[in-house]
Length: 133
Image 1 (spheres, rainbow, N blue to C red):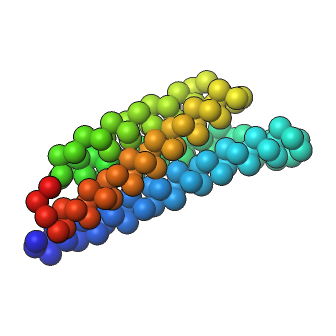
Image 2: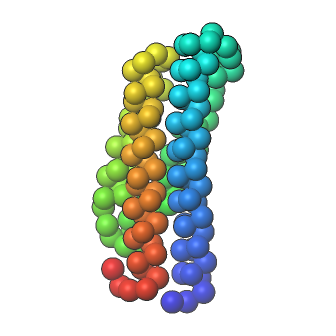
């Protein structure tokens, strides 16, 4: 494999890892928001700020498109793409429904699917460094 392909593969792998971390942080934010605001009545102004959700969704779309999309083009496997697009659709729906239990369920389901897509994509990427998948 030439150095350019190796560099692109390494970048995609790092971005996939970042995508998994971002998904985890999003889920922690969502669960912490439910607990702190719902149970303790604290932090509603910060944790429920719509801008946080819009920025998170934009980051998820950009990183997902860059890594999962590139991975699907490179290795031809559609599972990461289907998982990622489904997760992003759920996350978009969560932003549109507003605050509440529906938003939390949609967000958590969405970030889990996106994280799974990144993990499957990373596994496919590591395979392509050792064989022609």
